[in-house]
Image (cartoon, rainbow, N blue to C red; front, side, top):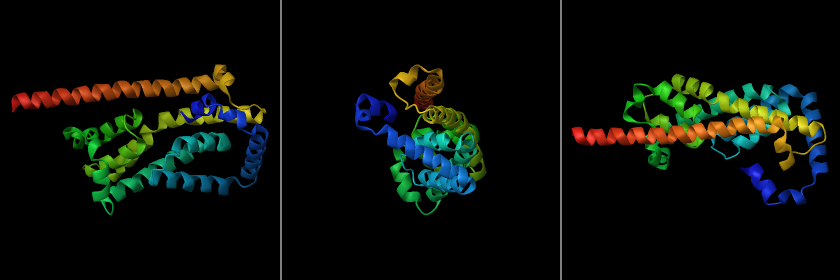
Length: 228
């Protein structure tokens, strides 16, 4: 969304592409000189963003993927899963009351049968993100799901979406290294529209899954009232 706003608002007209490309190339050189330190720094920065629910994860994923290539996939998956797990633990302990109140309106994400199928239901919430990532990080903390199941469901569930984001970041890196700046014209390039298509399909499936989930919960509630 931020990318589209950047272009349609004509902000790009005031953007210094030459300077940005120069800074980007300089950053790539620095990373090549200190690869381990750079990856460790990126890991902790991403973990911090996830643990504190800062709205920078998507941007960091694409930018980090452009800088680190497919190595970023492992870094992002681990940092996001560990960061989410730290927030999960905080929601069960020191921040329990505060976070419970903040996420109370999203209790529908954990239906009564959640505790019997906790791993697979959380896996579904990760694969089809019908609620903000930080919300899904917190709500399961108020169920009986174990930390191990939570971590594994998160790690596996965010993998498909992360792969698409990393793919997009890699494509942007190719364009930048060739001296091209991503713009609306590059959307016709299959290197750009294929990962964007993947993101679009993921969002569409998520919307359908959200509709199905709400309808199912509504039907259950009606059935319960009739039986009661």
